[in-house]
Image (cartoon, rainbow, N blue to C red):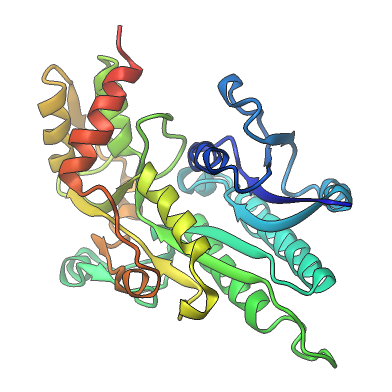
Length: 337
């Protein structure tokens, strides 16, 4: 008999590591994790880990002979900044990899007659505001506002949201019998900040990069202007958003894609809070025109009323708690001595 598991792709990344820690603590699922890289040594034993590629269809053909996937958290992706330098690779990983996994989930759903939950983290990069005046006017945006991404990563995420809606509502619609669809659920994240892992290529990473550099006594040149405002969320809230959406009854969900957020802050405001915790920090501003151009198209805030209404989403950390109770103490401890 095949073992029932929750599959996590991109498991060695920031979100993946945090998600494995949370899921393994509940002992609700056997966890099957996948990444191009091994997990850190301290995470051995928390999951059955496979070093592999989401583009390797032969690998997945072998896995489904041994495992039955109940829930799939598809986190593997080429992030925003890297995707701009390698758009073809980004499309292969972010779109083709996602499509292959959705087909796998659809096939498993049909075989067992019960939906596979497909949980997909999307991104603020799915938005594309035309100018700064519009960004200032439309301070918070809804899920369906300004879906005109200007980056390959944003295009990939928006398209995969649409693929998820297709596979969960229209796939096999010409079948003679009523097909069972996958259960696709997606959260659009703001910038994510972790106290426990180092940023790895996101365009919102200037915030956490400031903190980690300051804690190590390293100078940091911020790649956006001081007046740049974006929404952020600490990693523990991001994990709770994924788990909360995954646990919600299907009948309560009126959408397949939900915004979630916690607080919005300017780059200058971020610097002020870092300096309050690390008074000797050397933080300057040297905007990179390309990345500045990208964040200028992203909204200053996300409207997450649908998530609060449909599945009781509520972040645990506002800006005060984020810095005072999560980020600063844990980053201090990380680099202590």
